[in-house]
Length: 236
Ligand SMILES: Nc1ncnc2c1ncn2[C@@H]1O[C@H](COP(=O)(O)OP(=O)(O)OP(=O)(O)O)[C@@H](O)[C@H]1O
Ligand SMILES: [Mg+2]
Image (cartoon, rainbow, N blue to C red):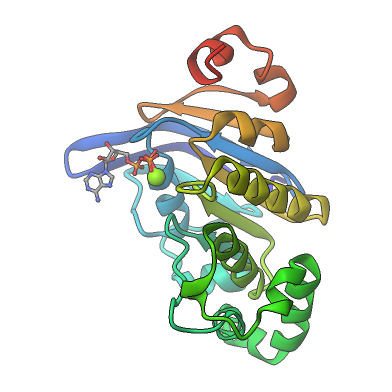
């Protein structure tokens, strides 16, 4: 059984359809990229998974269980962690306080020290600077903190929306490296990105969304050799 399976998903905003019959699956332990240009519908798909958008039709199954209508709390306790486009950090709180706030649902609160230790092992920089206010961090460090905070709820699946957005090419590369590290430690990740090349270099498989439809999918090693992908997305 797939960890996440999306079947024939259709989504509208009012009368305007933005997702058309989307099918996508993620096996446990996979790093899957969902790629596409501005307005393709990537965030809408994440919003449908997290319940912020109600699909018109279709199914979203997590370990075979339909997620439709579940509250954010319930999703968290099922093991789904969502990092929205802007990271959603508290700028006037320290790294440590931001991490503690990630220790939800309530059942995770007791284990927060252990969870923080895991995050610090993953991102030693956060330990060194744990008293530093989030707003004084660099863009790349902020993404590191946002990812760390997402780990505090003990997730099985991490959903990342545009981790590399607004980062310098070097920082973006670093952020991608962090995602790769998570995957190498066994985390399952859905990475939503406009940055096609860097995402395909680290992901196992990718889906390309164009105007609300999946137009391409497959192992990244194959997609990187695809003539259309090269022309349309890699500028080759
Ligand atoms: N709340 C909303 N109400 C109406 N239309 C919306 C809403 N949110 C998004 N849209 C429209 O739905 C389409 C898909 O938007 P979405 O944000 O999912 O794209 P995206 O692929 O995440 O783009 P980007 O890469 O710019 O973040 C766009 O045409 C957008 O204008
Ligand atoms: Mg988006």
